[in-house]
Length: 265
Image (cartoon, rainbow, N blue to C red; front, side, top):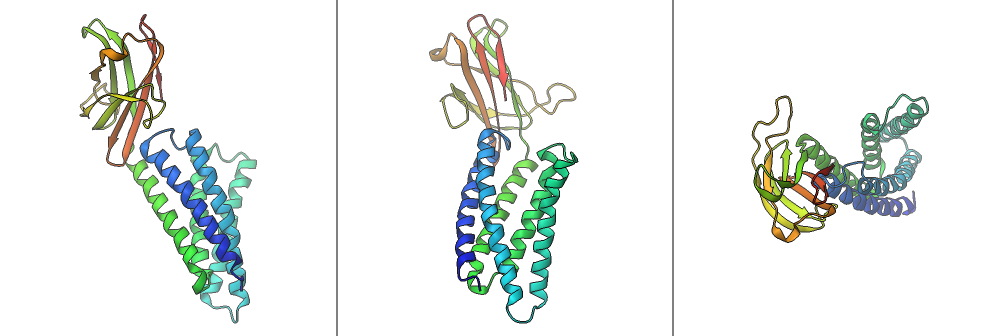
């Protein structure tokens, strides 16, 4: 018997993991900061704290399951799963020390497998009256994996290609952008993310063939309001696009009245 300690530890871990997962979904699904931006790193750290607390709870349940009466098939399976999870997660550390992994892009499948194994072992080994936190943790994990999987499947990218006055289009100030698919857009002034700044234009971007060999469509030109003109050096204009759960963002920083800009994101 774990005496309720594993139950309490698992609930605390589940709440922490749920908070981190919610933040990570906001970062990844909205396209703000990317999976490895500062916001994404912060969210993943919270998830890691939850997982670090949940793993001992799963181990306590497994050890308690083996001590209770005659071991049955379910208890042996949960024990083997915990052992496999430990080997899987430790494999990342070994591979990193031996320089077998180039970075997070190669390590994430191992982490996913390890987390799946830990969650499955906890659900199998937890006593009936302590199983709810394990099931809650599993539900959060499935939702997180589904949201990130959907975001990856519906990949959406944007790029600002022009910002400033245009003598060709006879405009004192405009922004030109491209994207890899159709979507609704907002243009925000002074926004470091799509949650900030002032909306100065909005509409619908319809994808059409752009440069040969590029996934980006043709350029859309949006005239900017006179209230933000003339541009000053460092003025930030951000384009935010959304199509369902898929989202993309890109920005440009003005070089001032002399023209020119620096693309961001």
